Amino acid sequence: MQKIDKLGSIPLETAKGFRKYKTENWGNIPEDIKAPLRQQLYDEQHGVCCYCCKSLGKESTTIEHLQSRNDYPHKCFDYDNLLLSCRTPKQCDNAKGSQELPLTPLMDECESEINLNLAGELDSDSERGVESIEILKLNNRQICNWRKSLIDTISFVFDPTQSSIPPIGIQNPETLELILNSYPDLNQKHELEYIVKKLTR
Image (tube, rainbow, N blue to C red; front, side):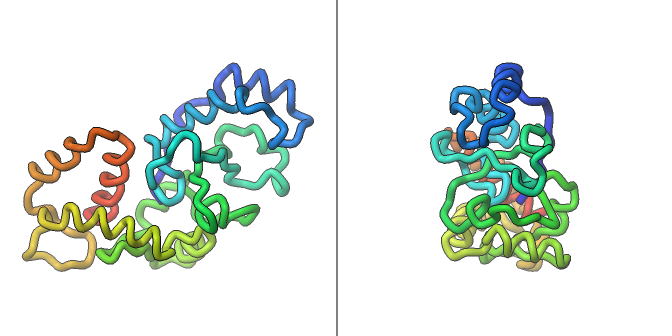
């Protein structure tokens, strides 16, 4: 999880459509009305999932209500309550359902309270961080292996004289920059930047 800064408001065409369908179930709102919102959230989040920070395919996303539509119906169309999540089974939005997260990507503290170790596992010293990781299932084997593979691609730039416990120093920032800039896919670059930020902060 990383901090997401909400930079705008609902696109005008989506806002108009929402007014027309405001009494409808969210699932009954036509996709062409949601599409501009989906694209804006995608751009705002640099193409990565709001929870696991994996690259999002545009066809495999869901517009996530941070506070659930069932418990907070008045926030259903509130832009500050909308994020873009992956559709990974038993993880992220799929695992969260209508549960309330004590620590969210809109809180500055998610940057400092959720940590990453060299095994690719997330941990936290705070109760709310631990609870959020558990609710979202952010330490399942598949996601930890993905993080570990990204860590392995840059491990040779780590300072070997330092502790292996984050924060970890970078021995060769120029090489790291070359690696980051070599990714033709910006979303994959953002994935790696997330890993670097979590390990070095």
